[in-house]
View 1: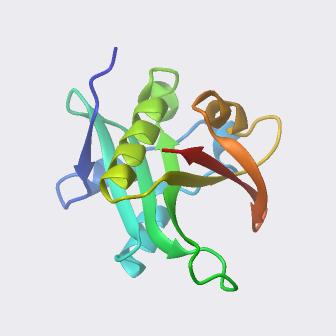
View 2: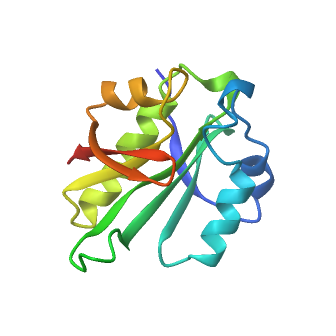
Length: 153
């Protein structure tokens, strides 16, 4: 069983973070880590990027979003959730994705949230089955070309 941990992105680990790549068939499902870090840089009050490390090796990357205004027509609808999840191609199937979702859920609970939102690309090769196994349900909402999933905390 893996014993991963999360690390803040620093000058010491940014190269390892940017080197994480998913399988070729997943590249259309998630943005590269460098793009995520650029988005985190311009939205520091919203983005929560973390490197997933196990035994000194970078095995994945996650980025949460914290309390963003989800629907302009409803000012009370602030949400937090999982924005990006990149598990290195050669590290998939070892529990790191499950660890990442659990770590984000724990952080959101600590901050007082009662649900975790994520968006995912629908389709036969998308991550829907993974998220459903973790307890997510699809809400019926869409965000651009992605569907919204929700996990009650």
